[in-house]
Image 1 (tube, rainbow, N blue to C red):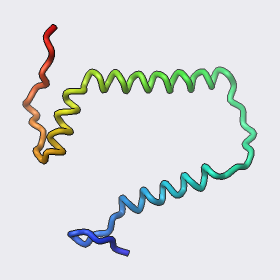
Image 2: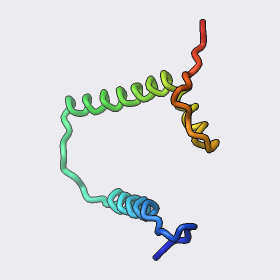
Image 3: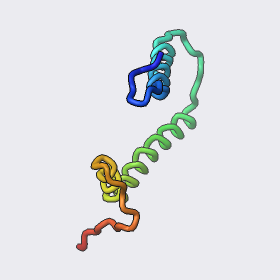
Image 4: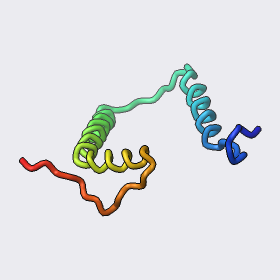
Length: 92
């Protein structure tokens, strides 16, 4: 089945998303008991990894926010980003 596009191609990416969401919904509804054990050390490691990931992404976004806004602003306005342009910094 071909979806309507201007160039006549099918939307493979959209179908992949639908299949992925359907599989996740099917597997998340399954209610069988899983007899597994996570010891306190492993649980602690998982919490530390989750916290470090959230903080790391926050620091990455904060330190590169102007570059990210410049690139996405240029993409959504239809102009390619200028690689020679430097981000302005606040002088304090």
